[in-house]
Image 1 (tube, rainbow, N blue to C red):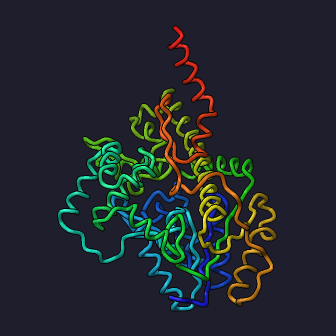
Image 2: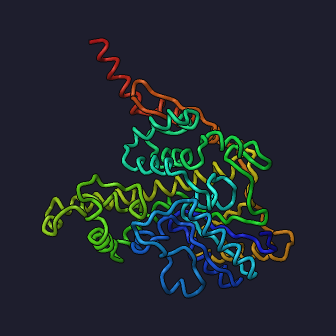
Length: 416
């Protein structure tokens, strides 16, 4: 529905202050908060998924938090359908919706018409049987199947990207059409772009919580330490005992589904598998320390990935995508929160509500390296046996030490 109210989106890395800002805006404007985090929809693991506390949730109503059991499936389509319904209800009641992400492709599914499945679509029984079989296939088998069914789509994906490969196959069986054909239609439709369909909400704004990288890395490391002090390990152990032990019986552990995708589970897997006594041995302590280091490394890497997504998907001048205004809020110096974050954000939202010119300028699009992934070429390094999507990744690889070491070894082998 068309609303006079704007849709407010808050993006940013873990620990950047998204929750704090969302609560301030909700309190100031009587808004309600919608979590766009694929892990927070599940019950449990409150610490590792960085959910708003129960006290914080009393400040303003929250949606799509603690709604599902850990073993329940929940896709981006499910999120889109639920979130759009909530947004429509809030707009109807003249209530400001504030979406806080988390999971960037969830945000994308709200802002643009990029998904191909519509609610209420009936799936032929034969197609449902084929989809059920997909769960039993390895990533390499899934990729081979996609090459057979939709080679154009397969050529755009990395052979190890199980989530995207599986998604394209499911679309093929649900719709009876190739994912690549549907994407092509979206891209060439009115308002479409290299990334898909047209903008869904014309009256929307995006706040991007930014932070200097060195400060953010330190903040993320400190956040992991704080999580451990708050009981992260006990939370994982308890959750593992209640849900994961049965799930792993006679099966290879799978960290690609549901809440088990949460950063932390995979990193602490070896430690979780130790007996009570083994956890207190020297080896157990080393495994724990390695898990903590891995969690910090993965958290920092994920934050960088989130930043790249904003730059490539929202601020990339190489695409013709229509994007809501993106306002950066600098959270580097927490002592300047009011000056750099709170007051500008309130002023911007107020200007949208009053339909007047905003005194703060949104970020402009910038030239980015290479094409969008959806348009990028695939490269294969014969020397290293690795696949790369896009010229930027390829150039980085051929200049890397690893690639040069492999070439040196092969040259020595030829000479000997």
